[in-house]
Amino acid sequence: MKLALLVLFVATACAHRHPNRTAAHHDAPDDIIVNGYAAYEGKAPYAVGLRMNNGAVGGGSVIANTWVLTAAHCLTTESVTIHYGSNRAWNGVIQHTVNKDNFFRHPGFGNSAGHDIGLVRTPYVGFTNRINKISLPKFSQQSQRFENWWCVACGWGGMANGRLADWLQCMDVQVISNSECARSYGSVASTDMCTRATDGKSVCGGDSGGALVTHDNPIQVGVIVFASGGCKSGPSGYTRVTDHLDWIREKSGIAYY
Image (tube, rainbow, N blue to C red; front, side, top):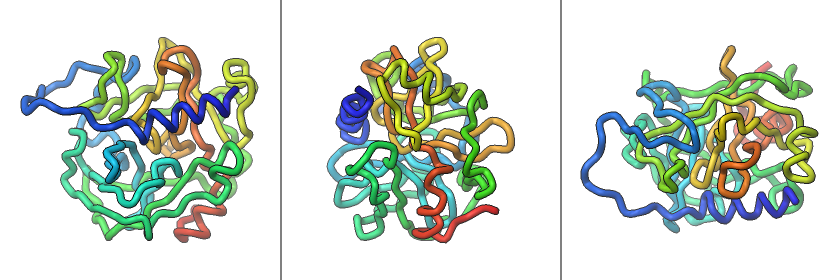
């Protein structure tokens, strides 16, 4: 059941085409992701917007000056334009277009569930108060499941009104056990993780590739990859970063000890 759900989210997230936008923008956006809230500037300086050359959109996170972490299914295109440093969607202070020669998808992606994670090697980007990296878990935390931890997930994906967000939206959510998540989806890979859909909070199409970050001593523990049908009736799903630290180190050299 979960595999079918994941396929559905792949089809609607990084394949979610960017709608036509009006020229006018609100100074204080009041539309929200599915029961989330509008981020203040600088809340998530690691968050980047991805726009693929096929018109699809997604998210990612800065993990070093030359690396972005995202979902593997967001990297099945010829190129991607990365928008850094602005909460306004697709209006980055810095923009870089990167071709597929710089994409790295986990070799397990497409072969088994739980490995929807990828890396983009980028031109050098300097850090500011609006652009900065998010740390990854330490290797000593590889066995940590983060159950019951409070985290934040942000993105420019689908909102409660059915449109993609113009302004970065965030939600505060709690990590649940995979067994609790499986009660909604039938099965969940051990290398995936979920957050509870309290008050209907959920990631949605277009959020794929974004980061799930702990509130305390912020580290990225998940990569957004799936949600329930309609993004309102079940837990949000993520690829578990701790289970892919060896692969991330192998491809990028990034590691925390």
